[in-house]
Image 1 (tube, rainbow, N blue to C red):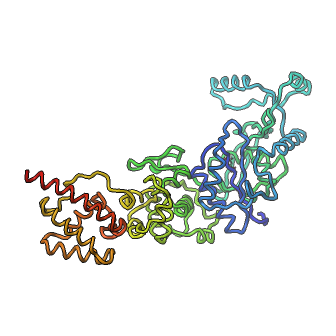
Image 2: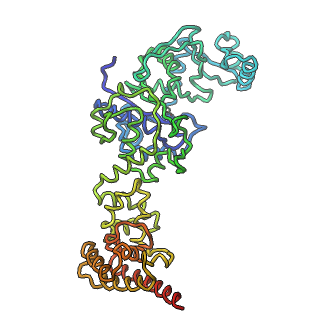
Image 3: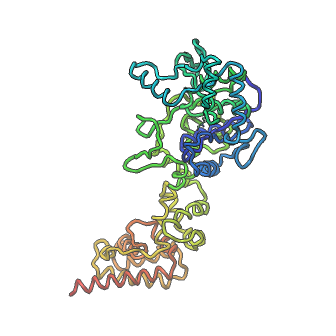
Length: 504
Ligand code: GLU
């Protein structure tokens, strides 16, 4: 057991956009660092140049910032164990590869890609285990000199012991034993001088004094190989913890990068897409933290601070965890409702602005908008759903069927009369506020002998152009007196045409 201060890391490869699985790993590492007062390190494993994706790094940093997972060492912030980009550490890996060869733990392999391909083909035909046949492990000095003379650039391979077992303890999975006969003499350094993932990962975890490795379960199968590298270098490996598998919403398959479809709706898997879809970072944080860990069996909702207080890797479950988007939507709705309305409006503003093609300042600076936002807040599960609830505040209602202006159980003429009277009230109301407005309208309905609901229906269409909108009178207040009257006039015009057509 180590008593060094906790140092954990995430080590993403910038090969694609940051994914929900990567975010869960980041959250657990971050929580563990914060829980123990340790350090959370970000290391960029960018040695695979063929799969390098130039936008991936920005996306990663943006996503981590959005989720408020601040890193103590790494890109932008530096630290005492840098560089934190593996591509800037090549001489280090080359030096250790050389040392491993010198000390007899590794060897140069000159086999051509063609030979390796033919070997694989042969093994396939004979139904043998596919793997390197250790041809170069037993070269004589003369043979080696001949390859060198031909100018062949070798790779460096690790010598896997001929027999035996490797047993290790994973904090989450328990004890695991692997027979070395299942392992290949893996490549440590490629012929171009770049390390493989295995070599660079082990060297950096050691040099960066990483105490605990928490990562996705897809790396579990690499552990025996890594342990042999640690052994060869005479280093003590960090404590290992491999997180449970994430299952897609059906619970049947592994979560992939493809967007899952639930009840006909396509859901995101990339953090940037969760953001665009209008999920709150604190809700996504809470949701992802639960994929393998539980805060309290009775209660799924918690703040970051609460999670920091309780999080421990020994409590992470080995059981695969189903990603339930329905639960995420529910949780996001809960978080939305918890926001102060001003804050909700501020966060919704970019979504409303984008959907309606207006400036964000026009949204945040709108005098009447705040009146309807408490109701919108009760109804939406995502920020992206806000625009459709408030568009009438900013834009004239689009074309609607004039017949919708005819009140329930009323004629066109009665509806016209009612709307004219309502307009007059709205024009003369001393204070343009929801409560006195509603009282006046109810009194009007009584005077006209119509149902209040029928009158309200007419007004709702006239002012919002929709049958379903936030509560009528706060909606009218949000639109403001002047524009409300103009919209009533337009509706009155439409009703007049209907009445004229009926009597013609
Ligand atoms: N570069 C690996 C990745 O992309 C790192 C895995 C690990 O944490 O060891 O996830």
